[in-house]
Image 1 (tube, rainbow, N blue to C red):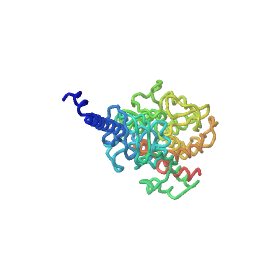
Image 2: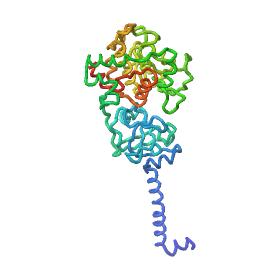
Image 3: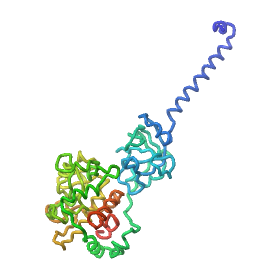
Image 4: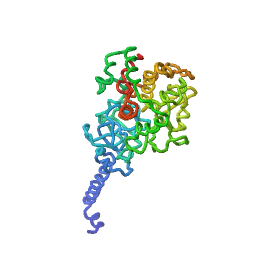
Length: 393
């Protein structure tokens, strides 16, 4: 039909034509807007790992630490969360790993906010692999399911409901506090096999093995996974760090406190050198090679994920070495100016860190390996972190 004839002979049809055009155009605009605002499920996000920006809603399951491991308690960091379409999900293949960058850690990190587990959250970010697993990185928005942000909650005081060694290894210590508990634990843990300093290399390759890569160890201060064979004195090698600095009591590396793997850990050579024999405290300048660590002229602060580990190693040394077997009587105090005296501080920080960072699976496994394969004794503060308060108040 000639459109000119329609305009001349049927003016009413022209109005109808314009109305029809409006009807056709409007749905196109609305449909496009709805698509942009759609929130994906976790399953949809896992199927769309192509670098797009998307909003995803799911339930917090725990803290991912490898492509197949998600912690559901005893969290070690605020840097990532795993979410799923069901709060009861147990398969990591159906979980989305969400990076929690610095801007969101105080509200959405599980170390700071353990009560987030099981709650629904919504996050907007880039759909791309994280921990070599389906993920969402660089979030630009995060909120609880209802759109409100949670308030940080204090980490719980470590408690214990008993353990498999309470009726055997710790039998003489159960129920005691203060000096009586201290004396009993000393008697128990001083019975041990002493290693040579050369044996420490092999012990650390076993005790600090990366759970996700059996060829590597995890370095204490950096958290880096590094080849077991790269140990030595080179700048990027790892070496044997005395967490209780051996100059604090001048015990050297002879068999005894200088070779006790309960406080010896693999560390980056240059970071180990930077820590030196400093006491432990909070604050200072950021350590470039060890994110989350800080240092100043007389102290060193480890990253949050190992603050409790450091504290429990120091407390172990204080109980194990009481000056009755030819070695110095080691004791924590609240100073950062201890020099070569057999003291190490600050005890107030160590006790706080023990509560801030409860024992995790890696630390518990390490304790078990030392007991079963190397020294035959245990760190009691890993098995019972509440004993630190029972002894030092």
